Image (cartoon, rainbow, N blue to C red; front, side):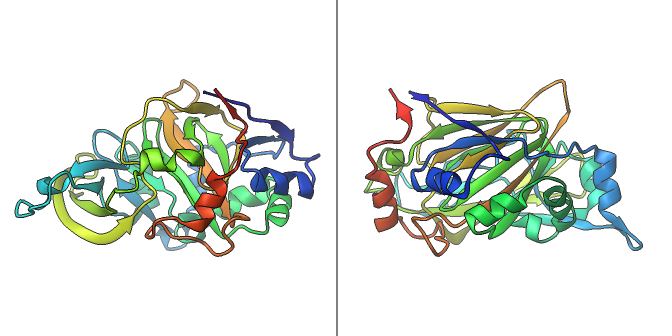
Amino acid sequence: MVIQIPRVNGDRISPTQLSNFSKTSTPVIIEGLGLPHLEQITILQLGQDEQGFKRVSVAPLQDNKTDKWLEPLRAWDANTALENVHVLAVAGKRSAVPLDQFIENIDHFYADGAGNGSASWSFLADYISQRCDLARMDHKLEGPIEKHIWLGPCSTRSRLHYDAVDTLFCQLEGRKRFKMLPPGEFTSLVPEDSPPLLKAYYDCDATDPSCLKFSRGEVSREIVWNYSRFDREDGCTVELKPGDCFFLPAYWWHQVDALPHYESPWCLSYSQVYRTPFVRSKETATSRPSSELRLVNGRSSWHVYD
């Protein structure tokens, strides 16, 4: 499978052209947005005021550096009678820590999006968005509705999933690789007879931030459909270097890996999300997609070729 991804200049892209990329579910790399270079010292300076360092929301990382994975329900609930039922195991619940403590222990924690750029990480998200030309993109895409900061070591992995929003993903430090599958793969990744996944959070003892200790907690009542039930080795890949900006339409399956690289020992990305033309109100991941996703799946062309 080969994917053809257009490269366009941000100065020349028209509102109609950008809207068409969204409407036709076409991934595209947008160049020339002037993404800033950031050192850790700059982030520390931005995140400090007269009270000291700001507290930021971060998630703990286990040794596999992966945010989520599947585990049998019986590993969490010994009394269950259900067979072949899995939970979506989450490495650990987010917590708020002082920014300097996070930076000092960045190999063990990850600022992992989830709207954090509109909350505890807004100081950094605002700095980035003000120093690159994203306002024109916002106007053309009628948004954004959320901002995200992704900051951690060059070894993290986000499990294969889709989002029900269009994403503009900006790579600032380090490199990231997107492994993608088109929306039409939904039924192969989440078969019709699949039960919903429940999230199960690991408990984390962070008494010593440099040596985290994990144990299984309780299975939550959070239901998700947008995570693959299988690991897939195939798919199309896009590697982003500092300065690249990637437009990823809604419903594209993607696994994201931070790549080790001599340029930087850490990885920083910034993303903004927008309502897709297929979903005018933000769809949550708690209900199985129906008419909107079938509409997307029914498209005859994905700019993907066997």
